[in-house]
Length: 132
Image (tube, rainbow, N blue to C red; front, side, top):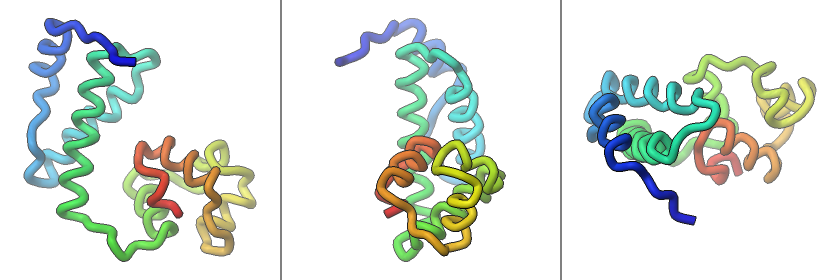
């Protein structure tokens, strides 16, 4: 299903957020802050969803180029995302299981399952394959 957007509302949102190609960490941080604001909207409009996807694409491109994780394990990626989002183990209990399961995953005693990878991908807004 293709969402129809209101060009005026979309243009206003573009003018407010001013997404651009990210060239440094400061610009990346601004984009991440805008992403957080958009994610906090309970029922985003089609225009807000479109801008969110644009910002996610820009951040992903920048971070892939400047912080490649080619050799990172799924656990390394999870720990990085937890640290960069200032999350504790308790914050993942409702995402991947009980506190015991989360502890085992975070401490490398248990591998991330496919279902957990899907849940983590959705939670962090990244490709679930990063966790497999």
